[in-house]
Image (cartoon, rainbow, N blue to C red):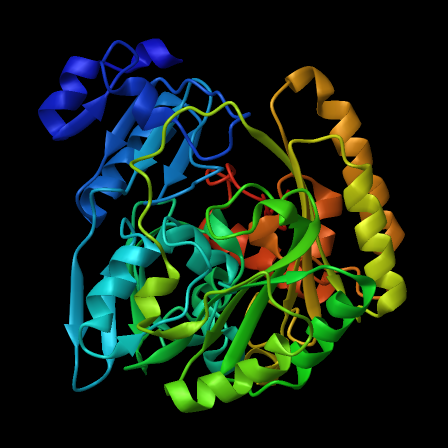
Length: 456
């Protein structure tokens, strides 16, 4: 079908067209995951919603797969032999200081948005990595450093501009196309191309946070999670349990030992923040203490250049846990030691707070009562070892599985019905399928954690 596309004609219609023979093609098709190597027929970087609608029409007319790429990692944002609709040049940001709202185009990254609004002492919570694009993280839910204080990203989403499969450009919110607005808050990119978001801005003129490195023992891991659960809601934490890699701020004799690399942010004044950190500092003598007064954007360090093909591959599993006691902590340490990868990590995020107070059926993200998010990962380089690391990840996940069988859609790598059922409870999934049938009945937007329409 790719021969239906005339690159020369496309270049007369769109300003930014990238074809396989172009010098920047490999860079433009590369996503953050090192094991994805897809070659689209063409990449079209659009500049507005009207151009997005034209690309949608083009994909339908040519009968080609369509992938939508935002401004960042975009694991699902490239397809084999099809068309990539690339939003990365759409970076307009309109800030209303009086109303404390911002209209942001979806090509912006979390770091770009965060830095711009921070100039006014304001913030919207996204994830924990500045290089992610606003589109993907918002549509999946958005779990980050402000989750306990201000909820998920979607809890701060007021409206959006969506281009649907029929080419209509819709302005949606709680009162306009409410079913679609419900669906995009957790349902991913299944329902259209999100070109613009309206976010609520929260006051955050100062913060206290950074990284704290502690020895990882069964006692310190369990105690860290317990303290994180009882901490003020202004404090959100991410505990990475891992083997210490060489780092300039870690003593040489710590390298190779189990550590907790904690990323922590207190959304408030320095005095209160330091007080909130005290229980964690008292768990054990820190290997390195980098907690300090800071501005919120400092939680997102500068990226080292743009994305490029990488040789490191990750196998990962995501899940929710009810608790982490010393027994679970021991199982975590044992499985990390069993990994033969370059690096193995168990990332533990205590949830709750503002996120948990939103009713489960208010948005398509339904895991409001989940206590702890766990991400298990191993990095490796040789694709021939894939099955070994996948077996390790499966065994690790099964060993710590508890009553909560859900999973966060943005961290699920595999695509299938089993994964969908973990991402969405049955009632939520049924409602999403009805929305899909209404707004994308032919399943044009299927390069994602795909929700098939209820009519299929």
